[in-house]
Image (tube, rainbow, N blue to C red; front, side):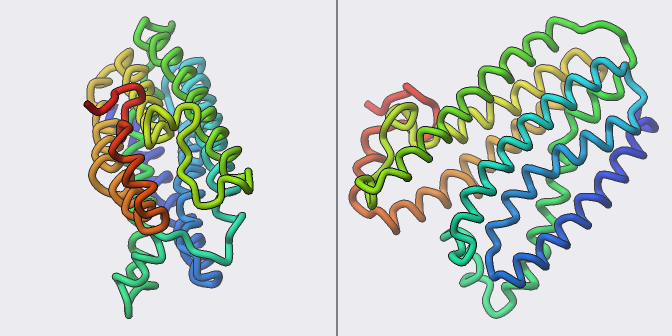
Length: 263
């Protein structure tokens, strides 16, 4: 199995690093590091296309997981693209803060940050590599379960993003905190359902040899969302921009899991 993964993994690393180098150059020219989020999402469809042409597993299974990743990755990339490009001349608060923290070597550090994002794309793609190497014919219960969970999580993530977009587009909501729809039950429903999508990939991989290793991906995503670049940085920026309004929102809602209310 390891031998079967050498080629797709190697090509994926090279492709993602080259893409992120080009994205860094673009970010350098426009002084907006937020564009990395768009291509972090779009790198996953690139990886599964590489897998599609280099994998040795059962083709039907490979086509299914590749289609799942392309649909999810392109939707997320387009969504983030609209958000970032909509204010391309104004760098998102998280990256503006990084630029300030890393001064006077911000551009150099951002380059390596972008490269780290490219490597993370390949590491997190472990479920896709495992699934595509499975030569057994036929779909297992794990694969059916993973697909159903993926469909539910993707639909809910898209719903949360749409609800937030509609809230922001209403001029009367300027300066307010979005607390409608799924956002009434969680401060970050988009993050929660994004994590569920990664769980669906891991469950799908359980139908393949060594599939238990795929749990590494949702575990990393969960740690990033809860402790690193997800909720902590997003909430710090929200408090800076919304002040007491957001602090009140924090006191009355769950940070992550919808409907898991604070007492």
